[in-house]
Amino acid sequence: MTKKQNRRRTRPRAIPKQRTARVALGPWPGPAETRIRAAAPGEVPAIDALLHAAGTHLEAHDALDAGQFGALVRTGLLDGTDAMFAEVEAAVRAWDLDRLIHGMTTVLVAEDEAGDVVGAVVMLPPGQVCGPLAERGVWGQVLRLILTTTKLRGIAVAEAARGRGIGTALLDQAVSLHQHLGAALVYGQFTAQDDLEAYYRTRGFDVLAPGAGFSLNPLGVGVTVNAYPHERLITRWML
Image (cartoon, rainbow, N blue to C red):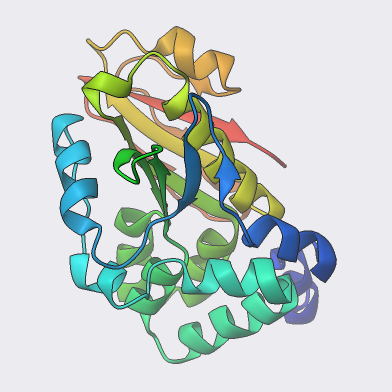
């Protein structure tokens, strides 16, 4: 396969600008009289409090406050995937992994009628996979992962707002955005003792056995994503 052919296979399918503009302009109506929107600068404390209660956290707080989170995602949704691909390529040429990770990170929140943040979801590129590849200088595979793969870092809903479908709405909206941009894989993990298998299966994910990993070979990346014995990985392939 030539380099030119390889590049064409890496690029996500182009999306009409009118369609992507409607997607990007949110907010979107959520359940229980909430609305779902992109997180705004200054909301780190509220988001972090929710995620901490769910056993995870938001990294690179300064990047959210500076508007760097989701910059490449916004380009793809508003200007089309060709424009996004050009910016991703520029970051790859500059060996700027932080720009790639932050730019393709999506943080959505659910806001109630009072304007309070009652839920959050974080999806981001697989930094633990991209980092070692970048250190080895395998930037072509980094490019593939940035464009095709997103990891569910966490979903969290305030205790008083649970049971209303807010977490599911956040997850579905985040997956939909990345699917519009050409994502081929969404994956994540949860602690094996948590009773979440049925939930993720209803959202279209395969749930692996405790400690089982999976290969990224279908994406042209010769890496296996591994899990600890107490973890279960979830995968949703959209090839």
